[in-house]
Length: 360
Image (cartoon, rainbow, N blue to C red; front, side, top):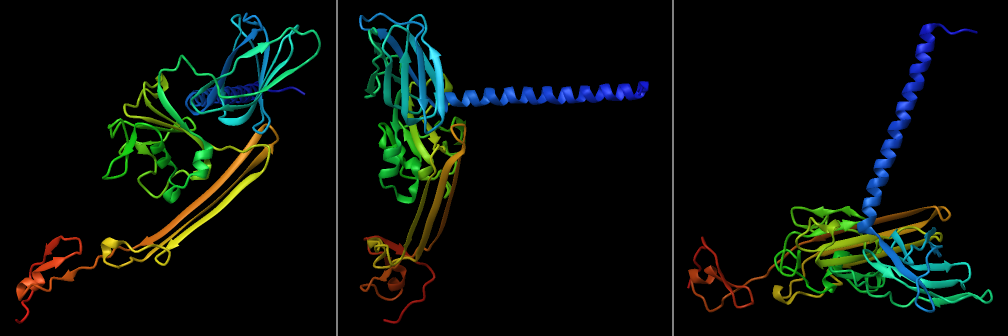
């Protein structure tokens, strides 16, 4: 069977188009991966440390493994010539394990390591010379202070977010737990060091700042990130790193919860109405009608064990509220004055015009 010249050209052009399509997909994949890596700088944490022997000398070429079974994370590196190891872009979570091995030394394991968002957790390993196969295992305590860090920051962890009460489940209000942060009396917007503007908000490494208010997207409306969707967040108030260079006020760096190898879920419902609310003393005994219903649920688990996870969340807020005030006549007034002066019960008098005079 032979092909004509035209058929040969069409066949070749088909191969060429498929090759161009494949190259386009590869270029797009590399671009997206580069963007994802850039996001991990702000939205994740890291583990670093030095491996030494019992004399204090560094141990180069040691094999260091960091893993988190619940999150399906497993990474390996070798220590540098200075005995240093670094693991960047780790998901903020507890339950990490650091295992260090080197021929001629006893294996060394650090359990229950916690990685915090935007923080470098430093753990050093001291390995003893191996005379027999004995493994040294320790439980991690607080990470060593990062002496290279110059920024002023605090981390609000998941225990505080889930256990502390907060009105309306507005998770951004927990930022007020950190030093140097207040909210203004007019709109409740966050103020860092007395500066009400120039704030930046990041969620999983993505910029979610409402540029008009310099607040997190949705903070000035009923929509906001669900409280049970947040793993933790870091509040940076001064001396930002280069990745936060576009902020002049403060930075709130949030990471959301992800699925794990176990299936977990939550469900909640909050309801209040006029019957459940106390009467506002400034309304002279009037309790305005109110109906507020807030409910939500979440579920997460593995799609492919230790490789791919899912996390689904749904939250709804429905509310109706009316505002009422009650004024009383000033019984000491006469004639037109009686209907021109009103007292609101707090010592303030308001005037009304166009009243018809009452008979004496």
